[in-house]
Structures are given as structure tokens and as C-alpha cells.
Amino acid sequence: MTTLKVLVVEDDARIADLIAKNLEAAGYECHQAVDGGRALAEFARLKPALVVLDLGLAGMDGLEVTRRIRKDSDVPILMVTARSSEGDKLLGLELGADDYVTKPFSTAELTARVRALLRRSSGTLTDRVLELGALRIDPARRSLEREGEPVPLTTLEFDLLYFLASRPGRVFSREALMEQVWGSDRVVDDRSIDSLISRVRRKLERDPSNPSYLQTVWGAGYRFAEPSP
Ligand code: CA
Image 1 (cartoon, rainbow, N blue to C red):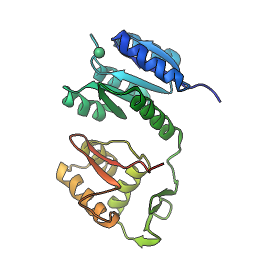
Image 2 (tube, rainbow, N blue to C red):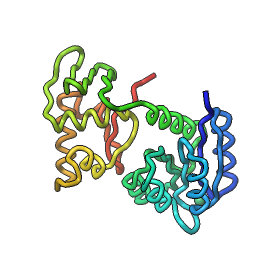
Image 3 (tube, protein in one colour):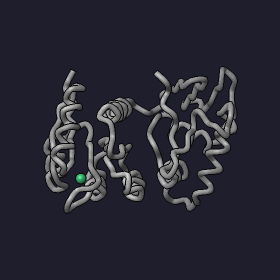
């Protein structure tokens, strides 16, 4: 098994060392960069499997680094944000970061998120039948079964469900979901995605007001719950 490379971009040496030490203990090969310019150079040189990216960098900030990496790579990006920068977190997710942790974070949490992102990015998403809890989602037949019973879904409902369920745990903003489900040429507003989510919840959830699959992440968007181990 080859060792996966992780690039840690953080201008606070103490935090960078702590992250690197823990990821190395978890079996990853860590490289560090202290600013945006060096991060992009190291990214091009190392081609890491994942980037841990502090948003609060001097000079080129983490959002700009995300934007530039996303121009030609879909590498998983885990943002590290300060609790005070809610807006940056949303923008980061919109720019294509995959997940985030908020300072102060536990190193165990950060390592778990790195692991989850790497696991997801290695799976192929095409035509994979998903079995999640009581659900069976078959993209070839575009069918959903709940506890063995077929549940009829519209095309949009199915597309939304499959998109989220094939990326469990990952948070998507309304904008990202609109783009994925409707495509960028359609003009829809936030309420369209909210009402689509409620329709899918009514068909999916035992208790739609307290969903166990399609969860709201307050201030960020929606995610499909990660199956319990
Ligand atoms: Ca910083």
C-alpha cells in the first residue's frame, strides 16, 4: 500500500506541527506550507491526495488558494476555520472545499475527517448501488427501496438523493445542490431546494421533522448522514 500524501497549509507553526504529527501517526506522509504561494507550488510538485487548508493565511488567503486549486484539481480539501469566520466557511464550501473543522478542533476529529474524505474520494460513483440503513438506491434502475418496499421518486428527487447519498457526510450548500441537480443553466431559488429536500424527506424518513438520513447543517446546507459503523 502506498503512503498517501497530505499537504498541510497553515501559517501557525505550532498548529501545523500538531496536525502533521497526528496525521503521520495515522499513516499519512505530511508536507507543510506556510503561505498560499508556497502551498500552490507544493501542491503542483507533490500532487497530494488531500489538502488541509487554513483559511486565515497572511497574503493570499485560504479562499483564494481553494479557488486556484479548484481550477484544475478535484483533490479533497479540508478547511480549517476560526469560529468567527462563518461567512468564509460558507464561501469556502461554495468554492469547492469538501469539509471543514473549526478552531479549536480536536486532532482526533481532524484525522477522522481526513480519513473520511480520502475514503470517499477513492470510491467510484458511477452506477454504484447504495445500501444505507434501510435504504437501497439503484442508479441503473433509478429506484429506491425502503425496508424492501419500492418508493416512487421523481427524476429530480432521485438525482438529489443519489447525489447526496453517494457522498455521505459531505456538506453541500444550497447553491452547490442547485447546480448539481438542476444544472447551471436553470434559475432556481433557495426555496426550490428546500421544498425538494422536504419532498424527499417525506418519502424517505420515518420522522421527516427529525430526519435521520437527509440532515440540515445549520448555516451551511445539507448532507446525507454517514452510516453508523
Ligand atoms: Ca492562520
